Image (cartoon, rainbow, N blue to C red; front, side):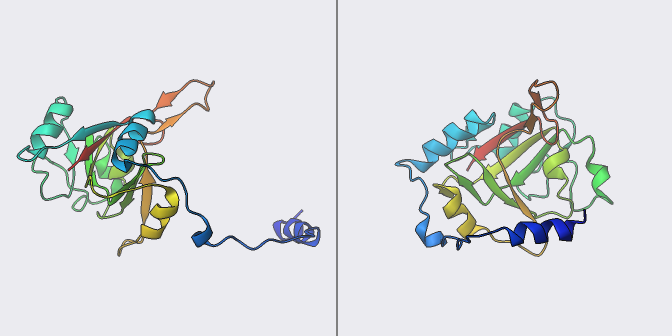
Amino acid sequence: MKKEDLLAKIRANIHTTYDMPSFDQMKGVKYDDPLHQFIEMSQTVGGRVMEIQPGDDINDIIRKAYPDAKVIASNLPEITIANRNPDTVAEANDLNGTDVGVIKGVFGVAENGCIWVPQTMKEKAVCFISEYLVILLDRTQIVNNMHEAYRQVEFNDYGYGCFISGPSKTADIAQALVMGAQAARGVTVVLV
């Protein structure tokens, strides 16, 4: 059976239709302290959260968190310890072997600990191919829930972005939890 035939049969047997609700009707959960909730949820999904204090050097914090990292990839000007730049590699595969990727998030979501990360580099593979991912996030940019988050999502010239929440994990294979199956084995959120 062709896809078109199957869809036609389904449409022919729909007796009642419903309009999509407007976003104005959906409020979502609100938190007394969204930052505290964000930190708690980030840790619940397997991430690590570090808060930078005035005067702290972000490069020292990353180096202390990942002392064995040999390849650090970032295009952020403040990350001076980076020795690979996702804007200057010839192709995405050149990022293979990245120990730590350092990127910047735009806002976090208290409800589930995820962070909106628009593509701000030529090769977005750094977000997924790095063994460990460090996401810099302004602590004042936390929304309560995904309803609020989707209202803030914006795309830049690259036209790509994604929500990242903790390390990659799956339990599909033999029902055993595997970390880093599709992306980073660990995620550290650094609140600035």
